[in-house]
Image (cartoon, rainbow, N blue to C red; front, side, top):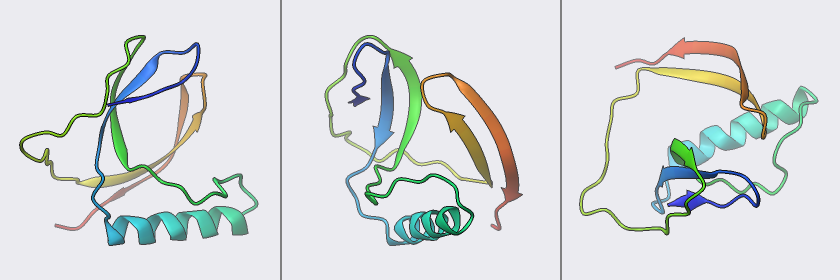
Amino acid sequence: MSFKHQHEPQAFVLSSSWENEALMYLYKQLRESMYEAGLPYDRSGHLTPHMTLLYDRKTVPAERLDRPVRWKVREFLLIHSEYGSSKHQLIGRWPLLD
């Protein structure tokens, strides 16, 4: 599916409607830590877990896949992304346990 942004390329993403309790807990902890550090964060608490594959002007409607897409995650990266500027700064990188 695409995330729509007016007058900008659309983010073509893989997303899931499945509720992941562990991911939501991580998101809550990150929001609380950002608040405590005085950093800006999404106050709405809305999260759409996704992986951006590419940006394009074409909008792609949501479509259910026949099989789940899976991959093994080996590390966690914290990245500061300046919205709309394509600038990204790596804040930290941590290996994950098997």
